Image (spheres, rainbow, N blue to C red):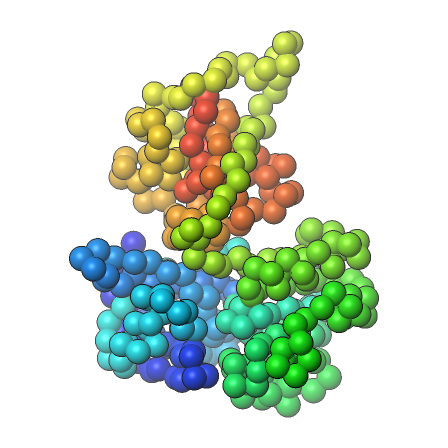
Length: 351
């Protein structure tokens, strides 16, 4: 559900990125409570329809800040162009309540943070919360094209000044040092054994860092990744997820045959719904067609808002970027990307 929120402040962070601060009415305080690292979905009118984009909150819920998200202009991007050129203080935006699973863990291990470009937005939120609410140390590697591209340069310097040796901010500027390489990442990883890593940035940047971390033996549970890319034109590889049901004597799951179901069982917030299924539709579309207030945002397989446990049957996913390999092994799926391939299908949204 979208809510009308007024823009109270706009901050020009860099020549091509600005932050937008939202006013949250008292009646929506609970709906818009959030954890550091989460994002909001914004909808804007476009050519007779609407476009949606997900933006991480760069503010921290623990630092007395307003709800602030930051938008970097994307060449040819209608929404980012509007946010950077057309939006004014006092305007009203349509915004969904915060969502997302890229959030701080409950441990006390130090943090190793990697951000590239606008990927700093959820990372700085997590960093501010860590420094305000815990005794944990944090090291941030922030990669940018040049010094003019550094978003939140002043805020990061203030955090470093306020918290002394608890935070170390390392700026990598491509203009001065070339693109970030494996050796530099490996050196930082080797210097922080036992830390928990958080990654957000352009695809190649995150692929590099993730590859180095896993090669160094870091378990997936200590590597948290936020993938936000607009998926238009992105090729996807089909992936099949199997339900965690017991196999029969012939090796097949009992009561499961290939085909499509006449209806689907949807579990959400403790309630079970049996809804009709139209061939070709995703599980999320089916739930929404039935009037179920299902969690979702980007519908492109990146944000993970519609992550679900597959309880029975099999599905094929067009994309599964928001799920880790461990989550997929446990039978988790993305409802926005999943279409059933068996005559029985049941799933439960992650609350």
